[in-house]
Image (cartoon, rainbow, N blue to C red; front, side, top):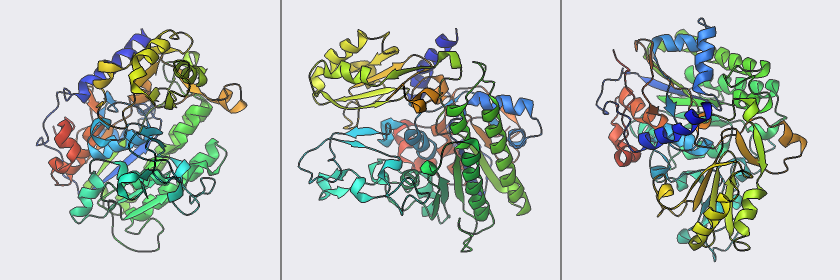
Length: 492
């Protein structure tokens, strides 16, 4: 029955993405606020938050829930991946309008890094691979343009993440209104995305590169703690470095990594999401850090005028350890290339498989070949043709030719017999419940402590924040394109 429920969530996502969430329009009443803080707890599920609040009624999460609204049935619009997940939160849209489907993705109009732009079609990474040195916490000094794709239509210039986007975001709009903006995260490419197409969305950003240490609870939480230190500096009216007094941002926030790290290292005891000790400690640690944020806001008499949003860029799967199945990525790659040698242009393979072909005319043949390997490749469903067009615009040069959703708990990896892969308990990227059903707690003063089970999308966060800050959500291009509405129930 659990698998049936998880697979049924795909239908829920499709319905919501089509604008059928049944929520109030953007003019609905939202409590006003002078500023908003967005907190992403990467990897966390809605059930993780529910279990923790129930077991810890005196926790920081519980305090925010008592004054705000918890949405138990919130989901990412399509795929539970970091890049589209973060953009859904800040743009009000899905990959259909933002142009960011996944990372890595493939773009048929761009040229490879370091090339002379004589050919088109290249893999595009929106992660640590494009900085000067991801073994250094400062990314080695920034994004390395030599590692970026090139645009043959702009003089073969490098293409930064913010230039890949087709729509604006809330950081840009808040800046245009005269407000200060800031963001703190684990990869420089994420901060660059938040600058938006204008490149001007952030006044202040801090990145502590997460690939600088051996992944343990101590190292991940230590780095998260320093991210919170920087956020507290901003609440006190300084920039993230505390070197300059610049005033409290109107829109700011950060991403936590400790929960996601421990989901991969220790995971859960069972399918009911009872965490193993290390994961339980990570969730408790994040709760304590949010307590530091609340305390600092109260100390500055800012708490009652601040909207706080707690959510996640993505979840991770599986929760039930018995469902975990790792399959060699070459099973998918070989199925494609057996149709025609070299046919595969690119495949993004985690708890989803996105497949781009050098010859899209071979799509049906590849889909049939994958269908012959349903059991071997752990496949639940293959999307191509009209079924894929329902999810992603086929005219988009970044649209894959085929999308494969594995069975719950299944993900693809290289070197599956290596110690690192054998130790990996979870991954993200798919479109089933555990990848997309993320926490969503929106806490303005006086919202009433309600629990709402109505299905909503994380893309509804962006217009809700704008309404709370007194700005027009229709200024967001994704809101116009996808008719995204504000979240329901924020006022009695």
